Image (cartoon, rainbow, N blue to C red; front, side, top):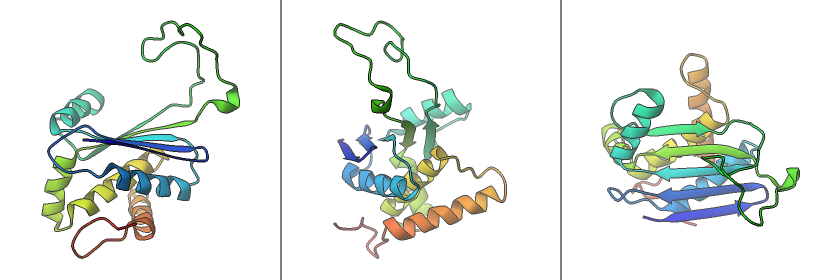
Length: 182
C-alpha cells in the first residue's frame, strides 16, 4: 500500500492504495491521471483511491444503491463556494487559521475510486492485462469527473472514443501486459 502526490502548475494528483489484494503502482497512475487532466485542459486537484472489494461494495451501496463491488466510481466535487470551518463537520477553523485568498483556493475536481480486485477479474475476462484494465478505469473515472457519461447514445460512443484516444496517447500497451517504462 502506498501513496503518490504529483503537482504541476495548478494541477495536483493524489493517488493512494488502500487495499492489499493486488499490486498497485501509485506513481504510474499519478502520471497517467496527470497526463489525462492536462490533455483535457483541467487545472484542479484530483484524488485516485484504490480500495478493497468490501470498501467498494460499501460505497456502491451508499451512493448508488447497488449491490457488491464495482470497478470504478467517480465522485465530482460541486462548485460550491468555500466557506469557513472544517470538513466534514463545519466546526471551528482552529487557532491561527487565516482564510486563503480567493485565487489561492484550489479547484477540486473530485475523487476516482477503483477496485483492483474487480479490475483483475475483468482483465482476465477480457483477455487483457491487469495494468491495461487499471489504465482504462483511471481514464474512465476522470472522464466522468469532467462531465462525460455513457448512459445513452451518442454519449456512450463519444466516451469510448475519448477513452481510446487518451489511452492511445498516454498509455502504451505492452505485449507482456506491464506498464510503460519511463
